[in-house]
Length: 168
Image 1: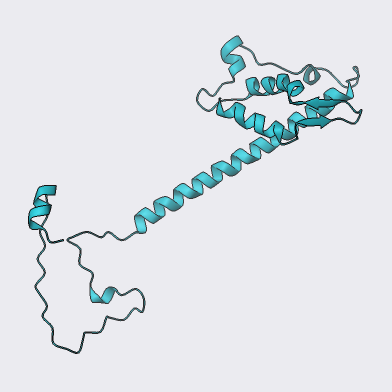
Image 2: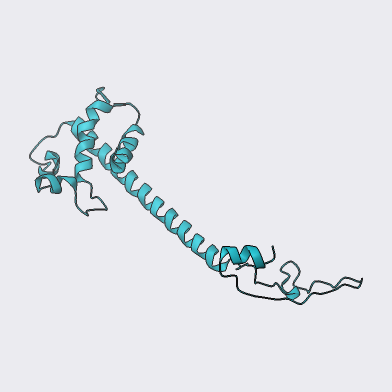
């Protein structure tokens, strides 16, 4: 199923499987599907930056209610309620998409900050005693005598070289 269509179905199901208008007429999901199809065909897709109606037929569908003046024509109240429901679903979908984009952007920015600020640790990296992050003081030397081996750094070029010569 197309993701945009799945999101629209989810928005309409948020109203419940049955929608009762003020006259008492009960709409179910099947009666709302033509309106859902119209809303889908009028939505702009990110991959083509055009609506499916333009790609299929060359023009966008319009609700008859949008082109009529309210002064001259009396619109049935059920149609007005359905348009109001479509407008609410559109506003909710737009706000959900904006929240989703903001969350994804924040998550991406935080991931990039974590990558750039993380320490680079490898086999030829030596941490100095002055780098103690917990107290800011150097790590104290032990009281007993100890032997400090000289540090040798060399570049490990391949996995076989790493397995044969580099200490684990």
